[in-house]
Length: 368
Ligand SMILES: Cc1cc2nc3c(=O)[nH]c(=O)nc-3n(C[C@H](O)[C@H](O)[C@H](O)COP(=O)(O)OP(=O)(O)OC[C@H]3O[C@@H](n4cnc5c(N)ncnc54)[C@H](O)[C@@H]3O)c2cc1C
Image (cartoon, rainbow, N blue to C red):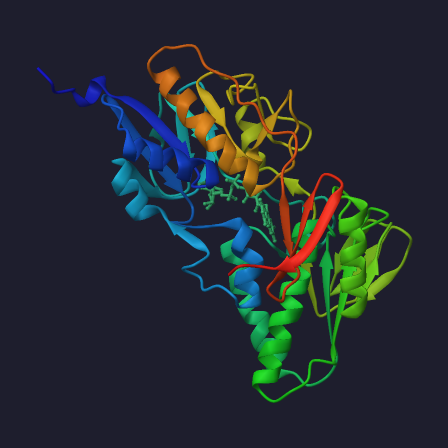
């Protein structure tokens, strides 16, 4: 008859609730796939929308504005939602090993767990800095910083390590919000000093010269000390040391350096690149394990290296959903063709942003 025995169901497991899987869940809700049991596993039920993080920190958005609730989305998609964190993969037995629940079996696995800034390779950093990701942890530490700033009178030095778009945006958002908070308490913010550290010669190394010049001007105007050209090699007791021997004493160090992947992926035996990201073909299929797919930051498209950005994670979502369907029905997969250029909006903390694309840049007010 029309019924499918539970044992006949194919298990499609979506690991992580990132931007790509949000798209997959939405499309599976719109067009269900009979005979497939969909399971989503995610560490955070409220999954952050990355482009809105600086606006959340700056106080322009609420927590709800900047997060997608996976519960109603999974209900719509007919998916089971397991609120848990994956810590390993058993690729031979086709199981996802989680922190709290028994291993979860899959026929097809898709990984979209994002990335975190690299802190492990800098001695002392893991114990004392505040990485901008995972975002939930960052938000908790950020709230604690707001309380400290309000309860202190003397000078305070805040450093951001990493001068890519994420680092620059976070610094400007933090500065804007702390200024507003102090003003609301009738206080000035002159005692707060800001530092931006980068190992590259200029800030925003992956952006064009016009965008860089605009941000150099904005940072100078807002009295941010920009220190480029030397790696941070050690952090201890609020003291940050650079490769040139320079030492900086800071009250808070926010970490927004280049992305790294969760280490357990490589340890599980998946083919990964030199930063631990899952190597995938144009079909978003793992090079080593064809029944494993990956998208978003965690995927390294070997033929088309892409910047780690939410924009690409969203775009990959559509191709991923179509290829998961094809794989489930035994049809040939189609390649994902990334756009060569993409528009970046880099916010300046104060409801303004710079649009950066290819060789041009445009400043303007953001539509909130
Ligand atoms: C400050 C800042 C600003 C940014 N601004 C922009 C921007 O304006 N535009 C832009 O395009 N990009 C921006 N980015 C980059 C963007 O954040 C990432 O590229 C994007 O979030 C990647 O999306 P994703 O779908 O790969 O994963 P994510 O959005 O990171 O989602 C990963 C999901 O997986 C879950 N997860 C993680 N580990 C596990 C685990 N072990 N088990 C189960 N679940 C897990 C998490 O809870 C999360 O729900 C910014 C980044 C930063 C740091």
